[in-house]
Length: 224
Image 1 (cartoon, one colour):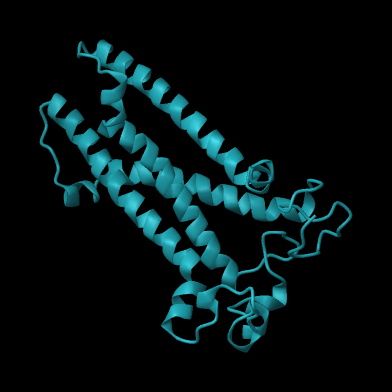
Image 2: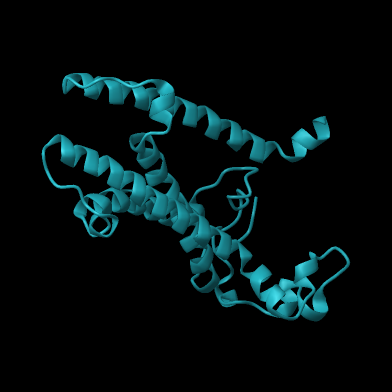
C-alpha cells in the first residue's frame, strides 16, 4: 500500500487539494448566497439545497470548462507550434506529427506498447488522438452544462426584476453568457502563455516542469 501511494502521490495530492477546495467553495458560496438573499428580503436555503442549485453549478462549471479548454488548446498547439528555449515546447525542428519511429508505432512498437498502438487502422487513429478527443468532449460537455446553469441563474434574476426569461439559444447569444465565459478563458490563456515563457529563463530544481538549473536559456524541451 505504501508503495502504491508513493507511486500515485502526485495524483492523490491534487485530488486531495481539489476535494478540500471544492468543499470550501461550496461552504463559502452558500454563505455568500444566503447573505445576498437576506439583503433582498428573500429566504435563505440549506447547504444541501445550495449544492444542487444553478448558482453553485454555474460558479463551478465556469471554471471547469475553461480549464479543460486550456488543456485542449495547449495539447493541439504544441503539436505544430514551438517556443525556442521553453520546457513546454518540443525541439524547434520537431514541429508536426513526428515519425512513426519517434512515436513508436507501426513497425516500431515493442512488447510493452499499448494494444491500440499496435494497430494500423482506425483504432490507432483514435488512440493517437485520444488525449485531445477526451479533453474536447469534457470541455464541450462542461461548457454546455455551464450554459444551462448560468441560464437558470440569469432567468431567476430576470423574473425577480419582472423581466422576460430567455430561451437557451437566446441566452448563449447574450452578453451575460459570454462575459462569464471569456473572463475565464483569457485568464487560462494568459497562464499557459506565461508558463511557456517563464520556463525559458526560470528554474525549479527537481521539477520536470523546469529545465535543469544549469541548462542554457536556449535549450528547448528538457527536464530537470
